[in-house]
Length: 238
Image: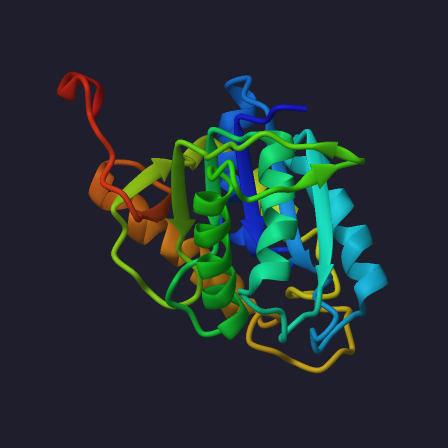
């Protein structure tokens, strides 16, 4: 069940918005990719948890991911404590991803900040042999991902690096719009929210252009890092 990449989000749709294009690119390259959602997004103004989970499955198929797991943490009120950390550690040790993508440290939704911190701590603790966890009754081995990257969300953060997603942008948007209950839908009669307006989808495109054009591409997704990446060959940077 080993994965190359595990993308983590506090809510279903976080991953699609933050790094959906990058996941599409990595699956196209043959890498095994999985998604871990912390909550079912049950506090969302529009739709409900059952609908959100159905939409998440549809989006996962579009992204071509190998696995999608939801831990069922309490939306809005999950904590970065031992109990939650151990559940995340179990997932990390089970799938053993080389790279983890996580929520932004700085964003308008407090769950995003908390999820970023929880993911960071769980990734570190997963590498400590004396932190004991089991999976289906069997003791798990310690494992720590090689890298943790944070995708950028609603509030602007200057990226440490960007990924060209130009060939995958349209499919990324289709995966986002799989959440019909959440994003712009002219036929919906639900209450308007920050993310349900047509302007929000324009913002998503503008952000991708903002990250892409300075790097010489049309669309890109931006990421921040906790640990400075090491480069072996500077000729491979461009």
